[in-house]
Amino acid sequence: QVQLVESGGGLVQPGGSLRLSCEASGSIFNINYMGWYRQAPGKERELVVGITSGGRTDYADSVKGRFTISRDSAETTVYLQMNSLKPEDTAVYYCNANLAPTWRIGYMDYWGKGTLVTVSS
Picture: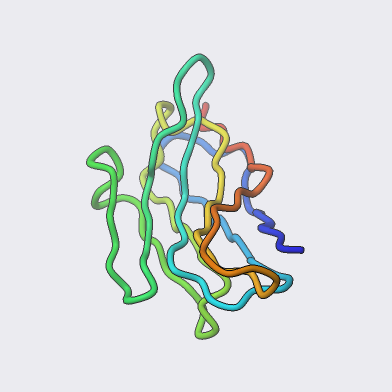
């Protein structure tokens, strides 16, 4: 079993900051990629930012300069530091990982259950 567990969502005022965390746990052989996606009401899920095992990052244009992805030394937990939050950042934020579990050959995509971020005054 593999689990991705997000935490850190909540209500914040415009201009404020939040830090999301996502921990991957379970029978994991290797993690190729981890990232954050978000889905606002009535919209499709979109990539916010991702980080490869080599450390390459890919940010959505809408969050560049405001959001920062980082990870722990074990590379099983990723963080999303969100600054200068705007009402349009309101969404459910999902953690995604492309990883190889120990019980099969090859890589698979896993998703967390999501954490709600609401930016409102």
